[in-house]
Structure formats: C-alpha cells, structure tokens
Length: 153
Image (cartoon, rainbow, N blue to C red; front, side, top):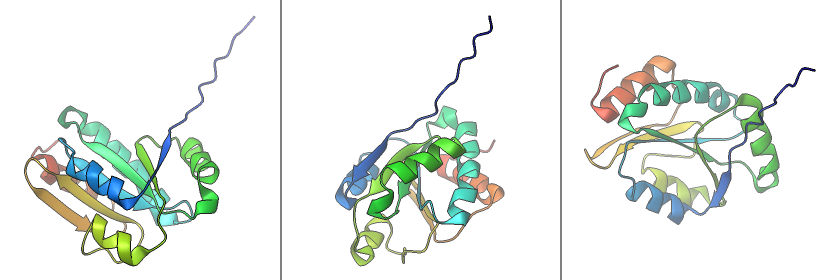
C-alpha cells in the first residue's frame, strides 16, 4: 500500500485598515518589503515570485515580505486565498479594507498615486526608505534588497 501525503499550502490573510498597516510598518524592527498588489493585476502576480526568492536569499537579515492586497471586498478572502494557494505565495498577507485611495495611498508612501504594483522598501533601523510605483524585475528587487539590508549576496 502506497500512502501519498498532500500538503495544502495555506496562508492567513489579515483584514486591516490603513492605520494598522502604518503601525505595523512603524513598529517593524527588521527590513520590510511592502508590496501592494491585486489578484487581477498581471504584473503584480508576475513579480511576487521574484520578491519571494530575494527575501528568502536574505533570510539571515530577517527581511519580511508584506503583501498588501488592494482587491475589492468581493474577493476577500476566497479569491485572494485561492490565488495565493495556486501560486504558492509565501509572505505576510494583509487585505486592505479601505476604498478611498486618496486617503490610504499617501499613508503607504507620499509618492504613491494608486498604481499597481507598488513597492516600498523600509528599514527603520537604518532609516532607509525607497518607493517604486511600477513593476520590478528580479535584478531590480535584488539590488534594492541589497541596499535595504546593506548586504550584497
């Protein structure tokens, strides 16, 4: 008899308000890569594996990937969870329960106009902060995480 074990890949998606995101970032004692994305945004979904690879490479620096879904309320949590499981995304997941982009965008970064994907690299210890309001390549992500941590791999 052959037994096959199936591992179900599942991540919890925390429903948050922008004030909770601000607190999470402010209280972080390690480097953060904060990526705003949505399930319907092809460039967003395409770049997430690059972020995961790079963050894994810098695990000794305790870099955390925080993926903030900007999906519509009708997608939370089932559609978002379905994509996360299908793509085997691994990160800290938030779903932003806000609808007023004019309010929440500048709280993530003053330069953010709502474009997806958007990413901010933050290291509170070194006061490093860099924002990108566009898709990023694997090389760009690698370079930015190197700057974020002060370590070249």
